[in-house]
Length: 359
Ligand SMILES: *[C@@H]1O[C@H](CO)[C@@H](O)[C@H](O)[C@H]1NC(C)=O
Image (cartoon, rainbow, N blue to C red; front, top):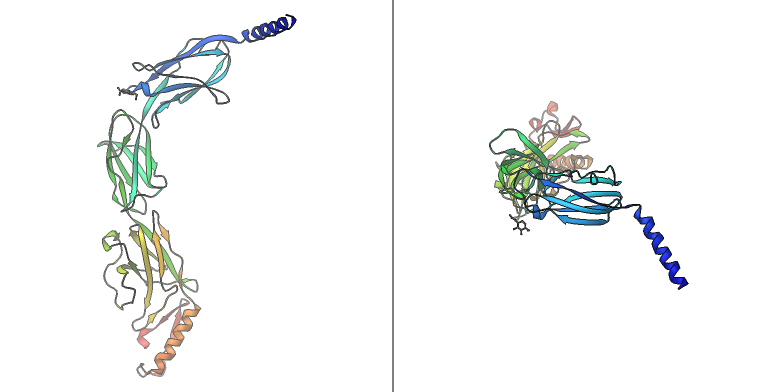
């Protein structure tokens, strides 16, 4: 009996202590939207400051009304949890419930306003299931000039526009150095997230490199491009005319095109579709073909521009050239030369080339 009294005493004092904080208020309001949305898909959740879920409720399907009962004072976070891709302002509200001045106790509405659905799409690399990051994609009202939103594609090529209200839109993509084979599409947004009508397609990526001799740029070195898998119609911006002076390459490689290095030694294949390539540098005077190192390079275009390692005419090759010269002179291929037409490799710009007029 004595023990029971102590127990009851403890219980009573405990309840008395709690009663000071004890309140019953309702935190209510509306999910509002100017366009038709399905309110039943939206949940309103009350979390403690520490992030544990305290209460959750659906919205009324007709008008988006919600009401959450609260029995304690304290700090809470009220969050709207809509289907993925639906946007609201605000997304959460901090509540400091003191039982006197807070928004719940005062019976004011807490409103969440719908700001739009998501539009999802992808930019692909031609012939691939994935695409590049970093393509600029624009959303405009159908037929309008002004851009509503610009986003960049993520790795893999996906893009998302948030906060898009129902309507018809045009989507266009652009990139500073990549060729877009399919650069525009459309989307119709009705009462949920919407996919773009078709994927956009990057036709090709720029591949560049440079050639130097002892650190100085070499111009007019030819770079011949081959591939076992990519066709000539999947590349643009380089010369498809055959280059004189045939090179022997394995039968599996088809010749695609060529470019020349510029004054500053750089060269660029402006638009190559994703795939594997072999490039062979080729430098030729009127009668003598020079070797360039490395003699060939294999590379793979995926979903990005590519910079090839530097190509060079180096000391080793100079030695090789001198050896060739000795060979040629021994074979008496040379016409008789006068003293002034001395046959020798000339060194200009510290790059090596043969003065073919003197041969
Ligand atoms: C709203 O969503 C619920 C739950 O998915 C579904 O049962 C109901 O048919 C939807 N209402 C409308 C009008 O689409």
